[in-house]
Length: 560
Image (tube, rainbow, N blue to C red; front, side, top):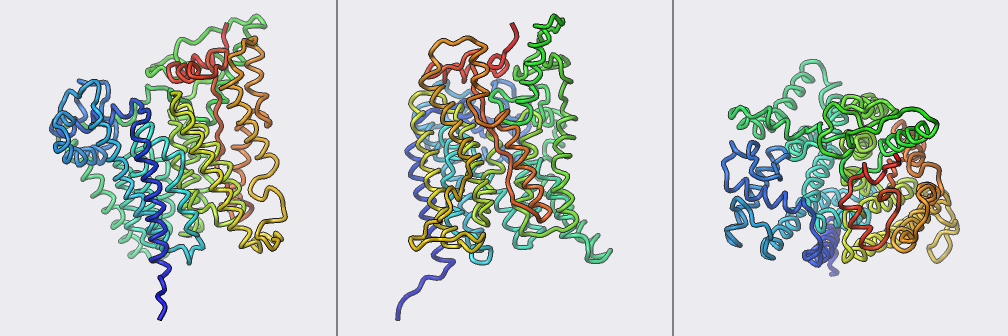
């Protein structure tokens, strides 16, 4: 009698194999460059172990003050417990200025092991692969994401752990376990508050899908139950600090609006073009004889205060960015309220995160993971999903390149991206060749499609070629001295589409809005990255160091 493996067992084994392969790559990245985020988390590890909880959000003995919600602080405290077995100085305050290799290895391994939550979430989603028509290879796109590998296992963060919480919540919602999904999402908010941008979608969906349409009494009972579950989670996180009288201090740490509109590494979003337009207008008006003062405030200087960094256009405020995010999110909120369906929850949450990325206040470039990782799960639901994810994931990963600016990491980030591109191409073409009837495409006997560029059209291909031109130029050709005006024009003309990502983002989000209403194809924002140093784009190692050290205010300075 032949032994047959059940689909769930084979899928679990395949996901475990993919996770093991990704883990091997992560271990190879242990000695690579690490950012100041490594020092931040190293200090938080020592802080939460050496000091009582009442001092976690008041300690100012280091510049790396704790600015994540309490659940992440508890998570750091948990990670600090085995650290004593490695080296007692790893959890002592103050921390050593130059960490030994044992400290580096331990912290790197904590990131690797915390990714088991991501594996579990992916495995839960994989078990539903047959019903959802979600092949295993689509889930491998999550585990082998080059952006996630670069940010977590080179730059250093715990995004895999946090994305595992998000995917776990989405899994419960897809299964119809709304209460559990809502509670897990509350745990995520108490671990990293930047996921608040998805809260409006969660509220609309859970209110309509879990509470409404079941009678007044039962609906109110479910609303009270959901509210109680979320309240318990928030109480577990914040009640100790309410008792200590530190809520104001904690809120100031979590929401430092004085840091400015943009992060030191600009996220490629709407505000890039708003700021560039302001500088171009100021430059032209000054040349025409108007008295346009040079703003004293910096977009990324850390503390903006009451000064406006804009010379011509109106100052962007946190309230204005919040209203723009909600306005952009409105189609998704309307759909989630009018017709809540579990099968669309991943798409809706991804769209909400995209809106926050595009229009939010002080957005980190790493926030693109919040929508690219969930979108990988639905990338093979349709050919349109695959096309948009293919382009979006490449551009999103490329926009993170400046994070790894040292020379020895250059080939690593390039090879991670190119390998992922090859993986996506093979996965998508083979999948849609085998299911060519989905969009009426004819397939030849070898399994390849007759239609050329099935995964990417000529516009997207031209866009990616433009990125290749910019990268080649910045690494090889940019050391040649050119007039400043020519350099400024080249950065715009190097990309084949006007204003680069501005139009592609608008088109992509428009198509996703159509999909939200049951028409057209899904997509998401497609960011791009300008990398300018002064008025000159520099290449080589010096250019990468300059991009790491200079703020984007200096990098986009057009005033003379």
